[in-house]
Length: 310
Image 1 (cartoon, one colour):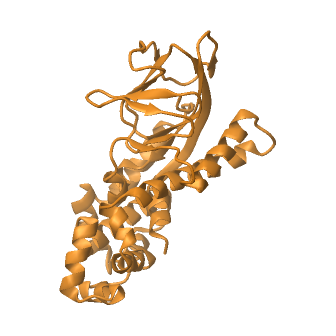
Image 2 (image 1 turned 90 degrees about the horizontal axis):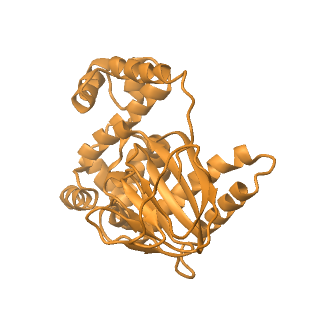
Image 3 (image 1 turned 135 degrees about the horizontal axis):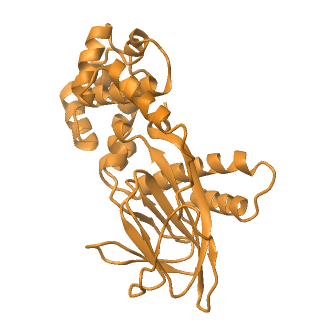
């Protein structure tokens, strides 16, 4: 089981959105906080990313910025340029002017706030992936393909763009993990811990023990428990429970399986035991959680969803 793919599939929801935007200097745009993960890619020119209380981040052609929690920020051609725009749906994609132009590829992903995985939670507010020669060729390829589809939409563009956006998300996370030294980057780089994680994700229904996971990792019980906790940030069985609950939450919100079936798929021998564990994690019974999710969907059924602006 590919753990990273499993995490993305379980936490992603809805449809990603994206667009290309061109501005001429001087320009400055505010991006309010949103309940989504966002990204910017500089396709042409240069700009600077601004956040309250943080140093400006200079962005050049090919640079990628990923904001896993949709933090409030701004983009401008210079740090001292006035922020005269606020990103909003339906605004012009191209604004002409006398100054140097900057072209941006921007977009967002809906991530289920109630299914946040610690791999995503540990990411900083802003992940900057500079365009260094020879690094992350898959990420660069995804950017090029996506930019081409958006610049000149052709037959099948509606089918091509969403999977390209999903690939971009995967490659951004891969790039971040490949450059990290601690946390989940260290967990994936450790063959023993990675083997245990694959075991949990491949079969969360199994009645795992620390000893059994340690055998997968090729370590003694004590050594494995200490090493797993140091890398992942919580003990093995605590992570197993967390993943079971994330999996169950997705099954409840996105499917119609009976509660007893969800309980079995989440690794619980009885609906009662599952309900007790789920309520401890989410603060409500599984049935109520499912109904609340459907009420939200029905409440928004008559509204038109507009793409998140760059």
